[in-house]
Length: 118
Image (cartoon, rainbow, N blue to C red; front, side, top):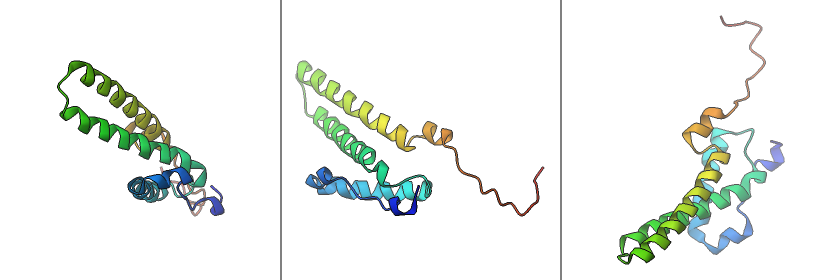
């Protein structure tokens, strides 16, 4: 990632939800530490989508607690499932799941001092 693209800013639409901006910043710092050379501004929209869908999933889950009508429960579970799938897809693309992190290719410093390990 070019140095000038490493500073990540949330997309404008996310500022409608100040709490989501805080979540965005928290995840952006985490991802920048995890992948300092491979995470930056081009990933901002995907991270924002993750934060929004995660928030929706949490909201739908909380709303389920108070429902008693089976048709309302079913509708909320469908919304919850969609939000979960969206969040999971974004999380996988960002390297936020265990399986996606296992697939990450970490660049290796080619300057090893001329010695090879066996």
